[in-house]
Image (cartoon, rainbow, N blue to C red; front, side, top):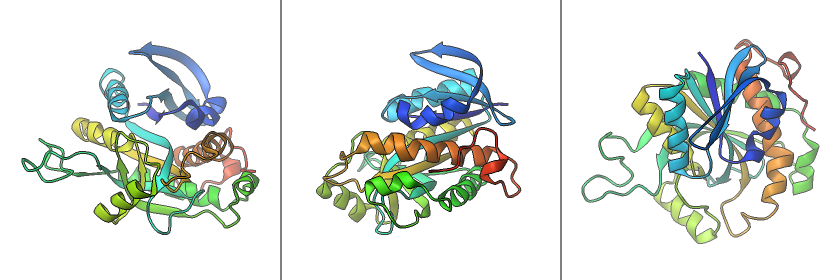
Length: 260
């Protein structure tokens, strides 16, 4: 069975698409599903579009119509955790919708009918992404210098929160940190993917490169960061996760390009 790799924006998936050995393309509900191989792994790559509804629609199609065996979501996010810096990578161990609030009927953030506010990512896939991230982040990446990043990027694992709003003010990010102090990053799709995968009892994992600190400067150089840094991280980390579980190296998986 095939592994699905999803991103919200074209730039987030561009480097992976460039190394995909395409076998066929389907178009359903405005989505284009590109089937092929990355290394030895059968995959399908698709863009879901921005936001939770778009992500949920795409994930449901992949799980029901195409019966994919796992869903990997990759892209960028805003950093919330105090130690989470621009250029770092976050692998989500749990996902929560920060704009879900059906109180007082249900506890804040709990998704009605599920009994859950936090949806747990698949441990095995998350660990494979984390292992790939450690390898990739250990390599020098000259593009980081263009954004004033001179320290070695870090890997973080923990809570990622999602909502249908681009967090781009210090006030909004402070409010989220106050309400959810263990949240590492904020984005717009991951928790919706998590909820749908939970409904289908199918594994998922979420990989995010930190493009900004979710504050008043969040929009600065965003397109450039996507193209120059995040796309390459997504490609190399996902390729590592798809490769053999025993100590993969960047040189050992097909299509990988050394960072920088």
